[in-house]
Image 1 (cartoon, rainbow over the protein chains, first blue to last red):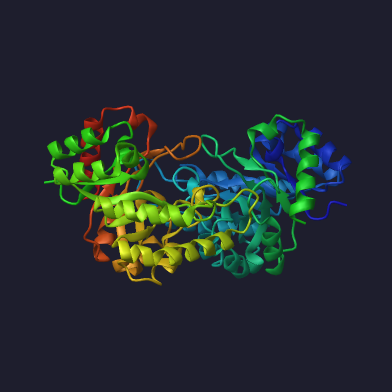
Image 2 (cartoon, chains in turn yellow, red):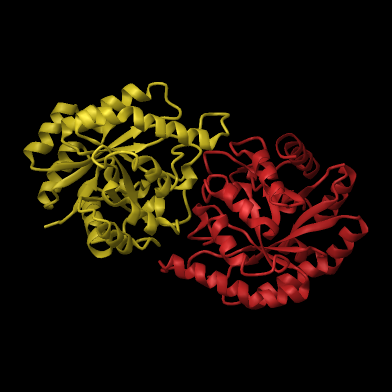
Length: 267
Length: 267
């Protein structure tokens, strides 16, 4: 039907969870990526029941992390792991956090991420959920995620069993890196999630919401998908697009466009 | 007086060239980085005479490049080299160009940059001007410059004599890269220019004009300056800040702020 396609909830932020689940079921989509905030708003147990009853699996829960700036990161990430387990999500996506105000020690911030992952790994193993370190584009290094390349994520993840700590390969964040194909091969079983969207310019203010549906931009998505396959990854492929204009469209229309982009440019 | 400080013209775009030269002279600043468009507007020979008569040297001319998308790149870059020579500027800064509309072959675009530099190198040697490949932050890879890391720039530049082809180390574009210090050491004599400004967030729409004066952001500028020194670079240090709010201030005030930021956070 829709193969390895998974629909990430952040692609249609205005779509209420029951409508999203119904829309996916009607479109033959059997996997979704969910986010903690809308899940909490709907109710964790209720959300878990909703997707389970619809025969839909949760490919990832977004997101934990924010190790470098948050006081509460340890407890919050333990809660996030428990939430993922409750949803049956095998993967918790980690956005590691940026630099604190006034901080200029980027290498030190990266070290703190490694320490935080090590501190959380035992709980991840207990929960049966993989901590998936997501490198974000270097334009987010200061304010969102000091892990900027797949190589950096792997330098941390490969210290652990792949079932406990892995990486997210997100085409949007990594396409510019001339080492990304070598790093995907190196990643192997540590690839816990593969996410796609496309790169377009000009970037909007804040640069977060300038992403595009697969095929609308300049990323060789199919090449990257083939590389991830060649590395041994067999899991879901999440279409995750943050775009303010896209969000204005009806949920079912967004889902259809994401599926079309996936089929034509990724699968 | 002001040591190795050089004031890049793009830091005060509203400042007419004669006023900028007078302002620099009054502040004891003896080096400026110039841009082709305002120089052409003022008149090339007239600009060359103006700076020479004021005892000011031109540390760089910005900019050549745009190899990947422009039809006219070969002739235009030959003209840019001649303009640099006429101004007595030892360095032509190259912004290599982004990806053409519909193109997804980033590696191919990078290869075309290498070919273009090779084609121009003989003319650079004749003109006595160094072609300086500037890696731009990966957020510009699609629309402005496919050379995203110092390593990529060096892979091209090190095929040539450092007097003919070098690299620009610009702190703003490179600070996020965990390989930048190793690459600066590798660069050695190929460092043709060192430029500084600081990284702040949120980025504005289009992301070009979101830069900050040295000390206002999160870059370890002094560490990078020390690394460039340790690699053997003894040339000018250009403060180059693109910032729409800064541009609204009077030229002399901008120059004073740039000099202050340089002294406190770079020198």
